[in-house]
Amino acid sequence: MLALSDVSFHGSGLVRPESVIVSRAGEVFTADFRGGVAALAPDGSHRLIAGRTSDLPQGLKPNGIAFEPDGSFIIAHLGAEEGGVFRLSRDGQATPLLREVDGVALPPTNYALRDLHSRLWVTVSTRLMPRDRDWTPRAASGFIALVDERGARIVADGLGYTNECLPSRDGRHLYVNETYTRRLSRFPVAADGSLGPKEVLHEFAPGEFPDGLAFDAEGQVWVTAIVANRLLRLDPATGRVRCMLDGGDPAHVARIAAACEAGTLTSADMAQAHSPLANVSSLAFAGPGRREAWLGCLLADRIMRVKMPVAGHPPPHWAW
Image (tube, rainbow, N blue to C red; front, side, top):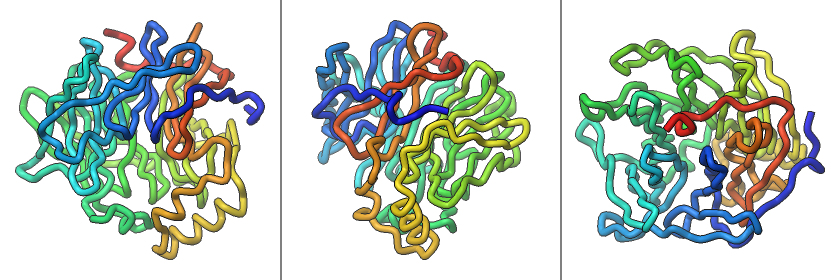
């Protein structure tokens, strides 16, 4: 098990670095709510690649980010009332990839990722506005969209606040975190990209709200849990979960869990972390042998780094 003393902190001045990605060459990037992607230097300084687009009068609001094969970025736009998926070039030009699906404008968009077959997977957490109306264990308006050579379409619906998704190592399943119903679920993926019946692999403890996920080299799934501020490692074969890092405050976790259950959870509640992990939200394996991880968060102006007890599985973009 890891300890908080194993975690080091990097950077300053970042704004909501929710999603962190690392290239095969070791470049570290985070989403930044100022409107783009922050490129971190080894000395902790950063350069903001601010997105320029006429499509969003209020500006780009990045939540999840991922790589394109050409080195540009995929941005999930989490606007106050609008969403979409954009491509951000290294020189700051932002162009839309997806603004609507099944004839309906995308709501605020949580995450987007391109897989090894060049398919784009997109998650929307909720259709409700404001989004905190769905911060309950009864959430059921999230969905997953797929964009491929056939176009864009919803392939899974009725999810409990859809967050990060990731194809399995063999590509046979799509894993997804359902944050406020506290589930890690997966779907079988057919050759045409359609998804089979959902299988719930694990329902997390009260206060463990799953956000980011990654696979390790042993086939286990690592999940970042906001509020509880934990790194959890799950065996898909058995559903067994081990807590690998615990940075949560028990009283705070209990209070937020109770508010969620009662349907009274607010943005003000979620703006508090009571943890140096600051609502840890994403994990990217990196470094020599992929034996370290970079961690994103919601409530600090810096990101984190930790040595891992097991190697990570290469993410899709390491194959490009």
